[in-house]
Every structure is written in structure tokens, then in C-alpha cells.
Amino acid sequence: MISAFHCPYRQASLLQQALAPDKMRVAFFLGAGCPSAIRIPDGGSTRPLIPDISGLTGQVRGDLEASAEFKNSFKTVATRLADNEIAVPTIEDILSHVRAVTEIVGNGKIDGLSKDDLGKLDTEICRLTTERVRVDLPTIDSPYHQLAAWIGGIQRTHSVEIFSPNYDLLAEQALEEVRIPYFDGFVGSKQTFFDLPSIEQDSLPARWARLWKVHGSINWWRTPTGEVERRLAGEEKDRQMIYPSHLKYDQSRRMPYLAMLDRLKSFLTGGQAVLITCGYSFNDQHLTDVIVQGLSGNPTAVCFGLLYSDRANFPKAVERARKQPNLSLLAADGAVLGTIDHDWHSEEKKDHPLHGLAAQAGELKERSVSPPERCKFLLGNFATLGELLAWQLSQGDGASNAP
Image 1 (cartoon, rainbow, N blue to C red):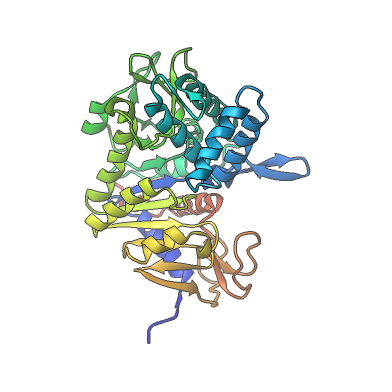
Image 2 (cartoon, rainbow, N blue to C red; image 1 turned 135 degrees about the horizontal axis):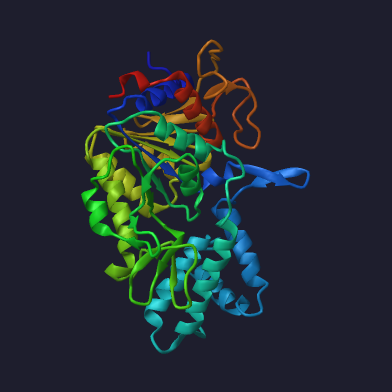
């Protein structure tokens, strides 16, 4: 008889086993929910280190609406988005629309907005976004540090790769503080520049991690001559490279982003591979298409999608997983495994080594409406995933097989 439930302990063990072999190709995809999992004091309570995309949008939107210089142009853009049936646009929807209109406005105006107006609004949105995401990790034992330590803790045949659509510098900070060498597509020191041949040849040692910022970064700048450089601040005529609109971009302007996406495609199509997503909702159609197409073309690749809350909050992800057998979605209340969508069972296994870390019954406030007696999967929280990696490293899993 086929069970009507999935077992969270079994799935946690399978994930652990997938991460252990030293010869397995492993990558992490860290979405906007990862920095939100880090809580910092805020009066008598706490708040996310960086808000998720909804929270970030609300903060930037509030600043624009309160700005004497930008409130009218932003109102015009918001109205245009509403007319296009995007009633609650994210900051990325807004940037995409501003840039798409900029490409076609020419020397005239569209709804009263000139190319200069749109360019200034684009720059201000990027500036406000940067203000909120240019933060440091508050401790040296954050989940980013735990991931970095895990990367450096086991010799591997293949480099561990980190993909992220986030613009912040948290992964860079953790890798550097743990002293893990990494390559992010840029070379140099004083005037670091983007180097496509280095990405394509990729002959660095396996102990170097790879960091691919698929939506750019607050420290990427495009110069007036079209060069892309990595540095902390831009000059007057430089353009900050965060979030590519996937519309009407010439090849040179899109190149850093295309190269990063090519790395994701290459990882998923290059033989046996394990991709772990955390803090990612699968709502970005462009990125999700790349992941699903890679999985479709390579049955030896598998993706573990770790979801923070219940499946009902991720309808697009569930729809994809029901059609893609090597996309496993592990949510708080249940999972989609091999296209089969079920709740977790109610049997607690208190003697299981991952009980209380990866799975347990009880209430999961603000994350799940699943009944208390039902088991919950906990690894959709990046902070908990970091604890699992630290625990696995302390157990020496995979270290005995290291070459």
C-alpha cells in the first residue's frame, strides 16, 4: 500500500547524505529569505537583518512617495504598473518597468516622463535599495559563516558553488572572515574587473568556492565605456548593476548576468549534481525556468527546494515540482517528492539523530498552520540549515573519504 504521507526524517537524512560525498558536485542557491532569517535587536523585539523582497519594496516605496523630487515620477510608474495588472509590484518589477520604458522613450516623453527622469528614478531606487542591504553580519557564527566553514571543512573533487539573486555582500563577508578563497567572476585589486574568459576556463583549485550573483550586486558598477567593475562605490557617471531587467538589454549590458546564469545552467547539466535552494520562493520565472530546464535535461541532477513555510504559500513552486520528478520541495507542512504531494506524517522519531534539528512535531508559529501533532520540516529556515551544516561538519561526515 502506498503511504499517504511523506517522512521528514527520511528526507532530512537523504539531504544529509547528498551533501556528504566528497566527489558530488554541490551548489547552494540562497534567496531573499536567507538574510531575513538573521534576526537583530529592534527595541524590545527583533527584525530581519535585511527584509525580504516585500519588506524591501515597502521601505523603498515609502521613501519614494515621501520624496519631493521623486514622488510624482514614481506615482506615474506605479500607475502604469497597475494598468498592466501588477497591483502590488516588487522593487524588481518597478526597476524592470523603468528600464523598459527608458529603452523606448527616445528624446520624447512617455506619460510625462523623459529619459532623464527615468534615469534619475532608476538611480534613486538603486541608491535606496543599497542603503538597506549594505549591512554586515552581526556575529561570526551566522548561517553564512556556518556555510563557509562547511565549504572549507571537507576536501572536495569539485568546488562548492553558491548562486544568489541577492544584492548584499553577506556571503562575501562570511567567506572572507572564515578565510575561504572564492572566485566571483572578477579579477584584479585596485580596479577589479569582470573577466569572462576566467569564468569559462575555470581552472582554479577545487578548494576555491564559486560565488555567482545572478542579479548583480551593490558593488558592481558599469562605467561609461561599458566596462563592469567590482568596487565599493561608483563614480559620477557609473551605473550600479543590480537586478537585470530581462527586456531590451544589449548584449554588453547584460553580459555579467548572462555569464552567471550560464554557470547555473552548466552546473545543472554537467552530470551528477545536488542543488539546495533556501530562502527562494520559485516566484522568479526567469530563474526558475533555468533551474527546471536544467533538471529536465539531466536526470542525474537533483534539487532540494527548502521552503520556510507551508506549501500553500508557494503555489508556483508546487506546480513545477508536481511535473518535475527531480525537483523535491520540502516545506514546513509537507513535501512534493517525485511529483507526489503529501503532508508529513505524525510519527515523531525522537531517537533519530536529526530530531529537533530537521524535524519534529508541535506548533510552528508564524510558519505553519499544520496541526501540532503533525511533524514539521525545519530546514527551510536558513538559520536552521546553517545549524545542520555545522552539525554535519562536527560529525566528520564525508571527511573520512576526502582525498
